[in-house]
Image (cartoon, rainbow, N blue to C red; front, side, top):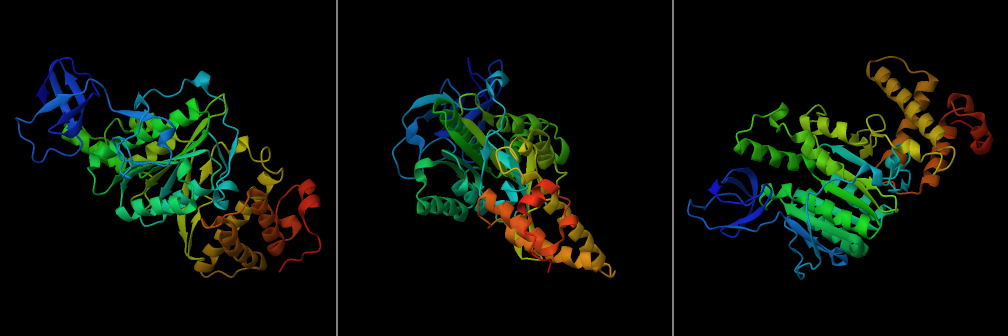
Length: 423
């Protein structure tokens, strides 16, 4: 805490050349959050207030750059030049928003078929720490139909940072990528700046340049942990799971930056939230679920030995805006039939595990479930949506009779190959 006059909340300061921010201002008593930690600082440290909150220079020069939490280059490139914009600005006024009804294809069948995304949507990946969520995020970045990809990495290992960098370079897409990176070796409190820096860049390209922007954030659990660290140091009374009472508002201020503008630009947000032993009741995923428009669960399928997008626990609340309208008309019917039969297969698996006899339908359901997971649910499947639907029809016809799939006759007459027999 220092004494200073005319300091505003959120103002950026430097303490012995370490970046810090005013997080409490009471008269002339200013509490500073030193991002690099206070180790080595004395009560006689030199403090310089900048008179403004953290800012990011925005311009087309952001494309292809790797920056730290303060917007400074970490790619040996020159400093970014552009219009200085304050980060953590207000969300977009609802009257300036359009209905999110533009399809955003990712190429991942478990998403596009069952949990179709639209531009302007906000949705998290819920995953265990040992699952390859960063690889999935990189795949989404490369496959998604977006003009710009903004990556905000919080607490990345050096291996993950180099993985993202090498993946984008080898794919030749650096001209559409902007990365804000905080590694596990960087000060943990700097993670608090990453989402706001990424959102500011995204707003520039989406609003000023009217582009489709995909904003990827990983890992929001580490962001929330940094919030808890600050709250603890300020002697705030903790809420559920030792998280600060402001957790919901802090997360909402980020997720609500997702938007579909009337002019066509958009920010679609996909953020990773790692789980503790799969616990979705923890304060972080629990609050996230109330804010976002669905969730995508990653799950290791022991039957096929691959990670899949769980069709039961995953949900895109905005998919009804596009499936069967912006996609093929049989999309809703095929999606529902596949998931219903997959549920029957899980019932059959439970019967088998408990020693009950399986009938012919149960056996066929189990065979279908394995093929369904391999050909459509696995995260390494990269095919167009029409091909996903055709694959779905093939699976249905391979394992079931027409009367068993529960699809309307108008679609059966069009897509069911009558000569194909059930195996």
